[in-house]
Length: 463
Ligand code: BES
Ligand code: MN
Ligand code: MN
Image (cartoon, rainbow, N blue to C red):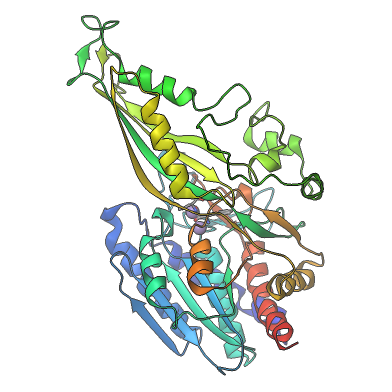
């Protein structure tokens, strides 16, 4: 591509300023009080796609938040790339742990990002990564170098389960027809160790409720004689792992695909420093399923984690009370072949069965999705690999991620196309955490790598 590097260099400040404007809008999909901001962000994305050279851009209404759809079709005979991303963000709390307000983006240098990083909620997940695609398109259209057709589908409910997107995709097969789906919503190993995400874990997210007596009780008058729902809930949760950190739900591992020792050896070649990992998290030791490495534990193995737990008195001082109820939110990360609905049922049956008669248990499924693995012997993967080779000067390493983008397997089922996950974030970018950020280097490298992917994909599709 001509002038790719110089175009980015000349427009760098504007690219950063535009992203900063987008990051100022608190598009928190989980919290209904931000509804107007979420809608405002959809409008801003529509505007940005228009300016970047799409021929047609629409706000598509759904039962939930709208999907921004844009396209530029230059020749129906050429391949079509469908870009997916999300404009919603996670809630920013706990606010007091941010060094600067989450929706007042600032640029700061860090050890890992000596060129600076933009600090704001959504900087990396996913506004920054989604916007790289908008700017890459701008480059290709304004320099007349778009080699193929492109469609954009940017949703506003990814962080809450993508329900409306499922609804939209099922109804719009033709509109969304494509040869490959391209997503930047994952990460890579390090700025000098490029990698392409080849797998995502599935997810089952449930909420549990344990009810004891019909009201909060005096813990002296009743303590010891009735079940304390918090005691019971924590005991039930603790029993979900055995001493080897295996999950104890009957049938949970039945469909888990065991990797061959060759595949595991291949995985172990990816550069990884356990010491640096522990240091970055301030922990003395890692923890997890016996018999697996840290990288395996967080990619090819399923997990069960409590994400939040509450009940009883948590205010100032002490109140002597046995709460009537206790609650927890639990997520299970799943690997390919485990079906999230089946796992949700197994969890429910098991959790209800281990409850003593002295309490009532309710399990409410939230959302979930299947895992995904991308093959690497496809033209999509090859095109991505060549693009990284050009911009990073190194062949990217294929690596499975522990995170989930449940909609990817639905894309394959509904649209029959494969997804390429070109993520440019780093694990240390603190997505979903306080002080989320995205490196300027990563942002610009993404903008540079994407057009090359378009080129290689178009070229390889002709052969
Ligand atoms: N972008 C993330 C997923 C991700 C991040 C995958 C980094 C791989 C590497 C996405 O926005 C996300 O947070 N997904 C949720 C699931 C969703 C259903 C709420 C997740 O993984 O917890
Ligand atoms: Mn995301
Ligand atoms: Mn996320």
